[in-house]
Amino acid sequence: MNMTESNIRLAAIKLISRNSFGSMSLRQLATEAGINASTLYLYYKGKNELLLELILEYFQGVSREWARHRPKKSATADIKLLAFIACHVRYHLEHQDEAMLGNLEFRSLAEEDLEQVRQARRQYLNALQELLEQGVKEGSLSCAEPKLMARTLFNMLTHACVWYQADGRWSIDAVIRHYSELVLKMLGAAPVPSPGIPAPRALITRRPMTAEARP
Image (cartoon, rainbow, N blue to C red; front, side, top):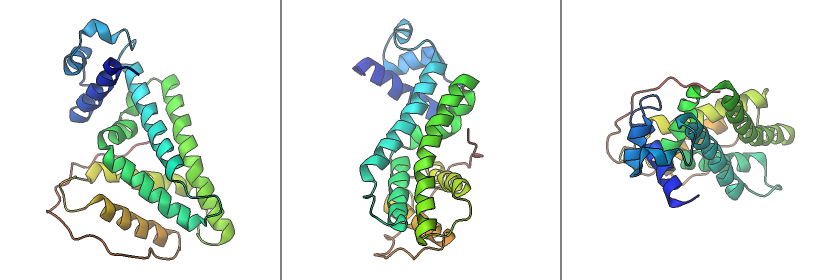
């Protein structure tokens, strides 16, 4: 990817997070990216194609991050689960705009494009489902429906990017610890060994809550 295409993508993420995909025009996008509108068509047929690329890039990014941080196969499922929670939450809080775009704006896609997003999402969820199934087999986790629980956990953990504020009361480490303790309780696992949550910072200002949907 060259600099121009990278600038287009960054500009699109910025505009979509600020307003919405439906409110973004190609003229606005070209201005934000610092190029002529005609140059956009050298890279994308239209903004729907660009949106699909951005959403798929989001799923590829979070999948790569988990591949980098996934514990060894010999690790128990509860250890893998804690690593997954930390990886997933940190990625979404450090890439908030991309995460919001990837989980909320897919509704603007055509059905054939939406199927590609569903497939990318399924691949990521399968890794979490396999982890839960391992925990049930070895007795470290209690879960009657691993497939359903994987989707539940994905939605719950991802939702942190809706309310989190970088200058708010919670640090990223504190958010990770909060969700880790909550998920382990849900699955009947041993509590997280602790150093303790970092002291709160400033009073949090929450974003307006957005009804969560999924493909």
